Length: 174
Image 1 (cartoon, one colour):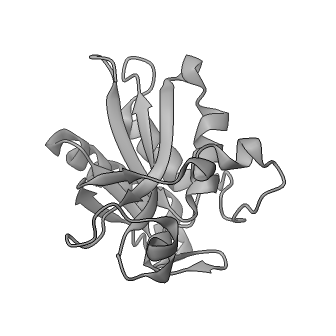
Image 2: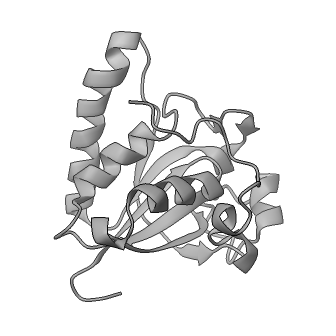
Image 3: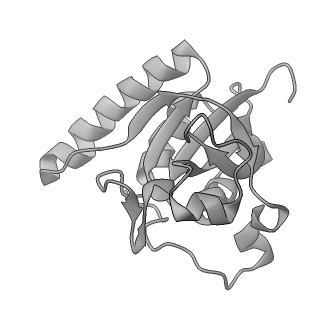
């Protein structure tokens, strides 16, 4: 990580689709410098989880995307707003047909400033896009804890496997 970059961590269902849509819309020229999919937000006694254990639900980890970004090119607020545009933040522990705590909607903040921004943007998105529909955002906003990279074959999965499964909620909703 360069000294001018920051880290954003989002969980919005299957991490393959989350990574795919962010990378497609935010190439390096638009501020996303690197991405990794992995696991975070689980129980403290679950260390270095693997895909099978996360999918079983016993670890309580979320499938998540870790983004290294250049805040001079794209702001954290812009990334949070995009996160909300690209999944259904009104469903608890699921996206489309994917169900379980690993598919929850969550923002894992790395600084107190990020927590404030995430809360503000969430309130704005709620008022603009969800209150008029009579729905409520259920996204958790938590301080980031330990991060574990997912197995190598998960990294950039939909770029290396273009016919792979993609959750239908991973698209631009507005």
